[in-house]
Image 1 (cartoon, rainbow, N blue to C red):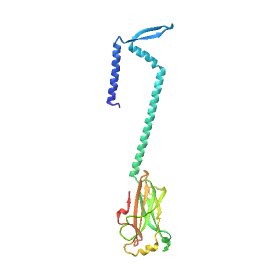
Image 2: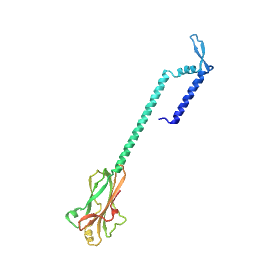
Image 3: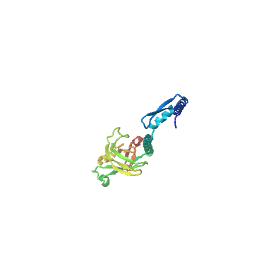
Image 4: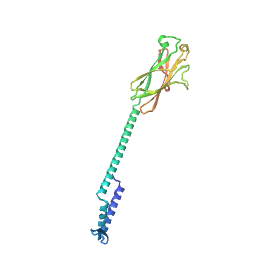
Length: 254
């Protein structure tokens, strides 16, 4: 809709125009000569009111060709305006769809969870104490959208105190291209480093000793936002199983 000031300007211009027409039409002295050449080459001139003269000469300017050209220009301008409007509308629609998708992914994010840790390798399978062993673990996408795993870091730690060391040098595996894990799908992984089984058995008799598997997984959602989860599990010899450490900050997801 037109704004109030635009309506006022239009009304004022129309008023000025009609006042000018009325003044000129009421003034008998507002005349002008119109001359036409006859067939003998002589000019026949006659006085006419100024308004008549204006419309007379206007007929030369606003003839059929001029009107056609003007109409073509107006149609062209209208077509261009329609094109730009349609393009802008399409852009806004795409942005709206992209924003809705991004909001959906943010509220239905993927979530990687680690479970099922176990010893893996020839030593674990055949009980050969001379063979080093690794730890296997599984992970699952328990979230509501696709995850793309791009980095996994693990470390086996011989721990002789209740808390983990402040700095851990992880064995990091870069996954390129990223591994796609759809929702409710599972994956399998091994720790990069191995432990000496004799050392593990020997340390098992020391009070306060624990074998700990600590690690992290970095993954992206479909908004290309990096997310990370961490896990820290201690091997319980009495139950022959891997259990979560008592400290909650060792297990995280963000």
